[in-house]
Image (cartoon, rainbow, N blue to C red):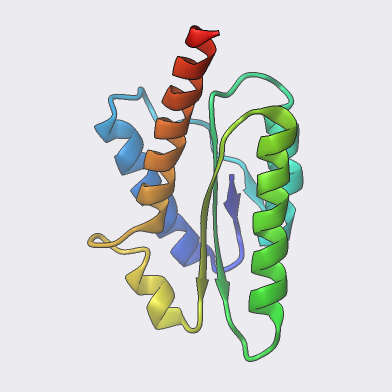
Amino acid sequence: MVSRQHEEISRRLLRGAFEALRAQGLPDPPEVTWVPGPLELPLALLNLAETSRYDALIALGVIIDDETLQLQYVAGECARGLMQVQLDTGVPCSFGVLTTLNREQAEARSGPKSNRGQEAAAAAIEMAKVLRRIQEIE
């Protein structure tokens, strides 16, 4: 799931996520759903999680501080919503949403050396494996 806000940087995060998924031997890139902005991510992910088709979900997006309180409110509500989706459905939702003070920071955290999308995909894969092991114990 990817937010269209700051789409150029979101696409860089998506490329990083695809790299991590390929490195883990997952087949062709998974389906990608785009939403208007970060606040729409939790609702869309909830609907995907409720289909029971996914072992994990990845939320990607970018929030750049525009000298208002947007960074705190939008980032906080997005993170809270993703956490609620995980707890309500049992499907891991990895938080790959950049929260930066400026575009330069966002570009640095979505590049080849450091890519939050790649990190979020790796975390989603790990959590899916952890939950699978826990379920096998039961």
